[in-house]
Length: 488
Image (cartoon, rainbow, N blue to C red):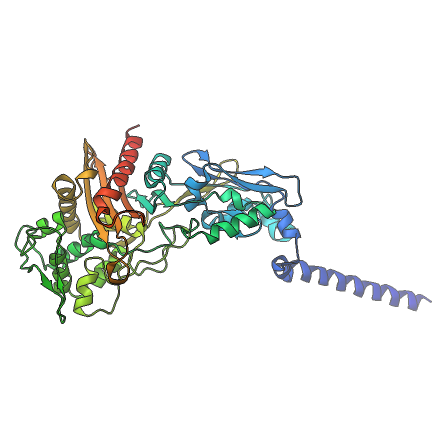
């Protein structure tokens, strides 16, 4: 009898061990696959069972959470949703997360291990901490000024602090209210269909996810390449550039929309935007020199994140001389995001280096304890410091006496460059109006802001679209907003 009892006890012990092993396997090994299974609603219920952490702009939260009392209890809300949508993105219970809501989801949802109430046991207990906070680098005055300046027109603005890479404004219009996509009801689904069906693409982040031909604003890069390579040594010497300029290997003649471009100096050509001079300079620098300078400014960089990804700006690596000439004036296949063009302006405003642009200053717990911080990092050296100094002189001339006088700010030093980029079959499309610029207060040694503005307005008369007329006033207003906030 005793023998059978021992066998029964042994069998029970084996079964108990087997149960424990299986439970451990399920909880530790198979748990991730169960979490990812669409049929498992427990993860989603837990995710929305507590308020989401907030995104902060200059000490003010621009997001929130609303208690719905439903199974997915807390729903995302937004303050000034359209204004900050190109930064926050959306957090939808139906369609997931984008932009900061996506890249910082671990902190905001409370799933980041650093937010766990018992960090050493978080892997076993699967406990979720309270959602943390994401503190941005945005200047609210610059953001609002850019948004209101663009108004109903399609376009984008990017503004950077040159010395650090902090993004001060990131605006795309038309915009949308991310709150429309919160929740699980039919209203969110209808909003999704409506927003995705609109021809003007309000959910497209034009500041970082759309590239445009940069037109004459690209001449900043071409001028820097010519100075750094030694093709131009004296900015006031004639450049031996014919007007019109015949594109190498073709019968096509490139002309200008201003007088006095024949053999013009680099200073004159930059101030008045002579196409012929810069097309020839690009050919004289050569493909290797131009691609090297373009890479130094950040073109063709597929790894840039701010922290969400940025579409790479393009400068072709294989071009014949005619194509290189057109690419050197920002046409042919040269394309850039507004953020990329702000990076170019920032490099000129500083010491010739490009700082990595970033949007998140720090992440914290809900109580304000810092989890991680972001600081200035060198991304590339675009040009020598001496070339940057000469480029600052050229950009200042544009604002003081050239095509960009509309951007002048009393009491500040401002540099700029206009651009009117052709596009479409036979250049039949309404040109894009560009303006890139930088500013520093008159009593400061450090530049305060670098800005890029692009306006695409299909309703405008073709002859009225100019960088100075359309984009310049927006750039000036954004620079003034940053300067005023620094003085305040």
